[in-house]
Image 1 (cartoon, rainbow, N blue to C red):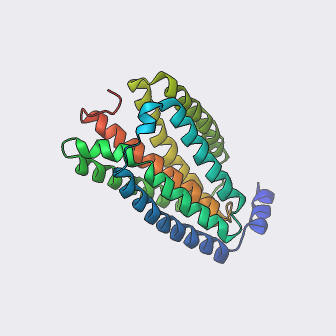
Image 2: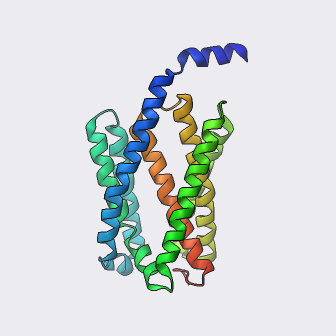
Length: 231
């Protein structure tokens, strides 16, 4: 055990490098919220009729487009092109918030429900980040759990495209809340410990976690307020 700890200490980046990666990650994450907000404002005014006309094909195309852009971000994560792809990706994700925000704004106190979801998301992010700073050990069990969880949730999302069951959909949202919270904890801890040294990759993971956390919380809140989109 002592030998493994010594090897890790020799291999781990310096504290200065880890702090720089963390600063760059938080900075890029904050910047990514700008195109997200612009995309969301634009998305509120769009009709998204193609999704209503062909929900299965539209969902598959959107998922394919998102994964393509994430692939391009990872492929260019060591150059400025990665930042450009990140901004384009977050703009697209903001656009895709349109249908959910449109629905939320049509229900009573919809803006308050959106604000509540945003505040809960921010609270979870800061709590998970704070916990990540206090954990000094490697967490392979959490990494394995997240890998399995990602596969299960992906299968669940694909299945729900065809099943379209409200109860099952809420279960998926609950799963995403837990998964995204733990992923924030794991990713921030990786940066703090030096396991992740690329701020673009770290930002992508944190952004997706925050995005999924917000949308899942908002849909759960809407459902418990009697305004589920899947009723």
